[in-house]
Image 1 (cartoon, one colour):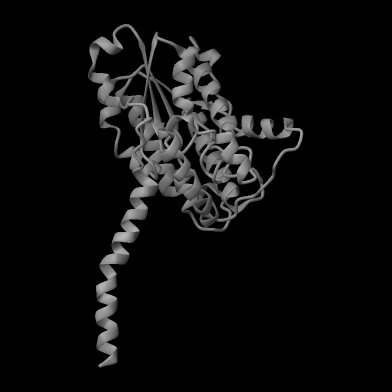
Image 2 (cartoon, rainbow, N blue to C red):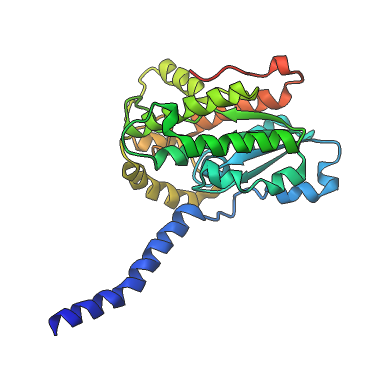
Length: 293
C-alpha cells in the first residue's frame, strides 16, 4: 500500500517538476525585455527604412541578442549612423546547427553585410574534457560550413565571422578551453573559405594584458555560469538597457564576462569596434582574414 502511495505522489509531482523545468527554460531562453531593440530581420521588408542604406545583419545566439549581455550590435549601429540599417537575427541558446536551419529570412532580406558570432553553445554543451582536435567537432563544423556555403551562394553579402569570446577570464578554465578549441577550428575553416575573421578573442586577451590588476577567475563548469546567470537575469529585468555590465562582471570577479558566458561592456565594445571596422571597409584588402590566435 505504501508503495502505491509513493507512486501516486511521484506521479502527482511529475507535472510540477516538468513545469518547473519548462519555466526555467523560458527564463533562460526567452527573456523578453521591453528595452530590447526591435531590430529583427522583419524590418528588411520596410523599403522606406532600408532605402539607400547599407544593410547589415548580425547573426548569433544570446551574445548577439543582448538581453543578458552588453549590446555590441546596438553600440555598433549607433557608431555607424544613419547610412546603415543594422539588424539582428539571434536567439538565446541556439547552436550552429540551429542557426544553419534558420537562414530563410536572412537570405530573403539580401543584406549587404553579414556577421556571425555562433558556436559558444556548441562548446558549452560539449564533453566536459577540453577538446582540441578538429575531428572532435564534426556536427558543428558541418553546420558551420553549410551555413557559410549557403550564405555565399544565395546572397551577395560580404561575410565576417567573430572568433568566439572568452568564457570567463582564466585561460585554464574548463569552459574557456572548450570555447577556445572550437573557436580555433571555426575561424580556421572560415579563413580557408575566404571569410573575414574578426579576432575578438585576441582583442579580449590584449585587454586583460593591459589591465593593471587583471582578474583571472576561471570558469570550470556550466553550472558555475548558471549560478551567476540568475543575478544577471534579475538585474536585466529590473534595469533593461541601463544595466552596468562591467559592474556585474566585477561583482563575480570577472572582467570579460558577467556570468562566465555573456559579455561585459569591456568585451562588448571590443566586438562593436570590430563590427564597425568591418562594415566601413570598402575593399577586401581592408578586411581581416587572419585566424585568431
